[in-house]
Length: 436
Image (cartoon, rainbow, N blue to C red; front, side, top):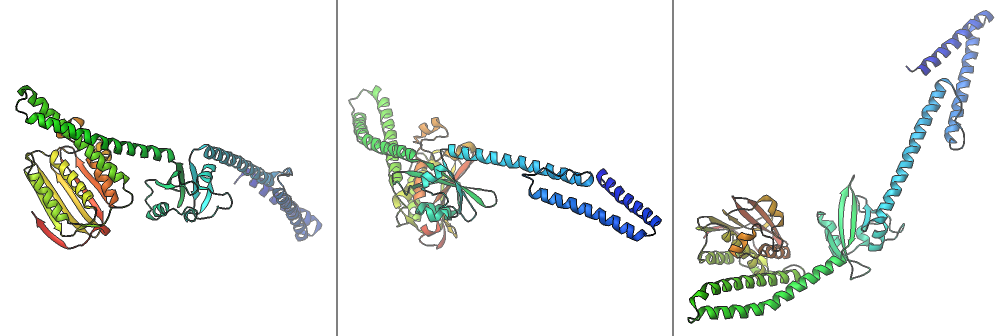
């Protein structure tokens, strides 16, 4: 028990004893005790009234000067009030700092509830998304931004990447939108103006496409003259080796140009691929025969056709996907190695995989394999004639089919590349087990 409560209890007991003693001498013990206790109760009631009055008007009145337990109560209330004022000032200061910070941010920020209702947004978000303060509060963000790309982005629920849309106010302006979840179901919408990056990317694509087309004709002429010189028996034998190297390098440059043209075509293609009926089994059988016809190929090249289902898509692009993956496996597998090609379907869709027993790829290289011109070992790629564009072409072609690429590899243990096509791209689901 605290000293204040001990003192208050002692005072009460003392008052009761004195009242009993006085009542004994007056001959009215009960009446005297009742009067004293009533007075004590009235005093505490009056103090309670003053305390309640002060709590209501503490901003304008000084705290009452009490002693004992009532003084401790007033002191405790004052400490709680001062602590509350301190935290309130701190919260107000943090909120002002937050507002200044969000105002200084180059990006727009929209705070949304779990139901995607707008709770707050900064100035840049208002400018970029044409939002109006007070009017658009409590409005669903998908009711204000009606672009189909953004609606699909919200419905998919995969917010790991941003989505780029055209501004409703200015069709030449491109905005990057990304949702970030936080708290108890709340979300942040980050808005960034990426118009400059989009224009630079468009300029880069145009440059690559135009340069590739312009280089194709000179390379064809150069390769033709080199071939003619190599066939001329009057040429000094000392020039045979240089001419062969010139021919090899010209062919390598032509392969790079063709790959760049193919990549530029895929990047320029809008929307998804078409719905041609593709005979996967026939295509893979032909690709396997082409591999076996090469001067250098792995000892075992096996094809497992576990489904007779066909694909719906672009035959040229699907052929490019399969050919690039099989070609990579053959290039980096030793002559005594093995390459397994597999096609199967299930409830998730169609799947194509190429597994090899080659040199494998270190884990740190896997995230960047589909970047254009990225090579794990530049020296080895040059020796095998690789351009560094094959997997970039595969990635873009798969995206046009709504498909994904899965890469599994360990250095020295070989690699497996698997393409997963969605169920809507599978024309039929007739199971068939075959091994050519």
